[in-house]
Image (cartoon, rainbow, N blue to C red; front, side):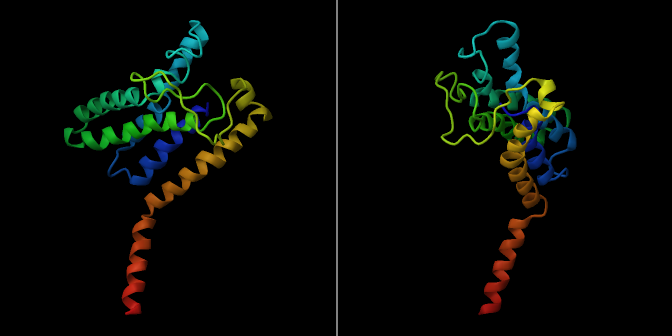
Length: 191
């Protein structure tokens, strides 16, 4: 599984890239935090002897599309009631993206049994054909306080952080809109 820090990167990149005038900072931070909720299934596997291959084990039902949508719905309802009901759809879509990004990153991760995207319709687990993100197979201490975690971080930086940094820059500076304007300007000057 990727680190929790890396699971927060898509939420931060999209949220900050879109802008705080569209998504308030507390919504963006909440999105980054809920992106790690699916890994709460580790509590059952580590402390309550839930088998890894159980739907209640790691990458089971908490990594499903259904769970992501339910969590996003509840979170958006809480925020839209507190902040403003007219922003419910925007918040729901952002929170759904944050939750779904977790499963997608695990889908591209080399470790584990696969991701149960389709639960409760199916217990089948899915792996990407290409799994470039290294699995965190060291302890917390080994990951953060020694060099044994360095390959994991380099893998995450290459395959998650840098692409989402590029997406952040595209969104933040509206590079797609600028590219379209330049193309239109070039077409009008050629005529």
